[in-house]
Image 1 (tube, one colour):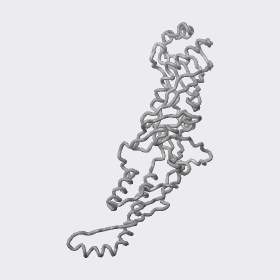
Image 2 (cartoon, helix red, strand yellow; image 1 turned 90 degrees about the horizontal axis):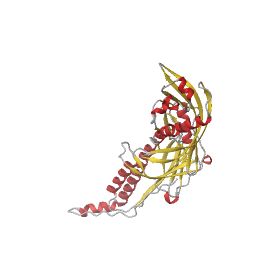
Image 3 (cartoon, one colour; image 1 turned 180 degrees about the vertical axis):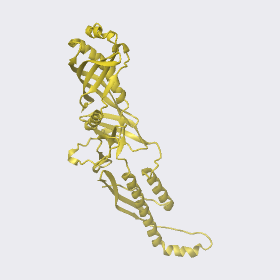
Image 4 (tube, one colour; image 1 turned 180 degrees about the horizontal axis):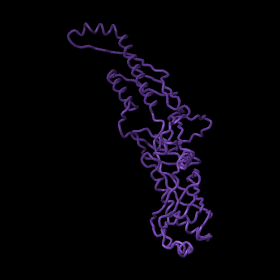
Length: 376
């Protein structure tokens, strides 16, 4: 017995639509032998209706395949269109373009940009010519590979900036004495004379969305900040100076669970004194203070968030394993295996496969059939 099915898949309003192009079952021969008292009588009927029985079995198999394809299509239709990150951001995972079928793999393109949580993800309109398809990682290629453009990372930085989350009031640091005017009495004597032994609070605010640039082997980012120094006076907070900073950091990426995480280090910074109520500050002093501030406070604070990461677009119930990361020009490529970790509650790929396999095993025990193929 030969069983064959040819299916196609297309993008329909941001979701995947699966359809059967051709499906058939051909049974070359069917042999049924009865044993028992009156078997000789019934055997005649079996032999007479063998063609009809064979046709019925062939139709039943075809119908089961069509039924399984419908269940799989329903599963694909109900794939989420966004992945929740937090109360601010979600990843838009609506599909763009039709799937691209290759000799041993299939490629799906999703929007991938971050949108405000609670906002309905809408389909993006892109053409195949606008996309530079990433190449699998040769010998490192595994079951799954994901390519993320730097626009993905810039979209979430713009979203957090717009939400007002890229600002922070700092009143506690590992070396707490740094936030007291006494620690600066020799470097900035005027500050200490005016506000002796007063605690300080730093107001750190991004003045524009951080810019992410992915280069070969490294991820670069530039952050423009305003750092306002405030004195905790009796019953009041007094701003005394504001310094504008342009900070360059670089680092790499890693996979933690199903999240893409990162870590950066300080490369370079430049600054200007925006205004001051404690007189003109010496450039060398400001540079030393800012270097201490960036290395001991800013970079660890940024890394505490980057190490948490954000979710990669993986179907629920699967987990990434044995991941390899390639940082290429303008994109990050994650190559990994995936493992099934829980039974899906809704009808899905695993249930469809198991149900169809069970039905066919019951109906055709002892018969041989060819594996089905999927093509577009």
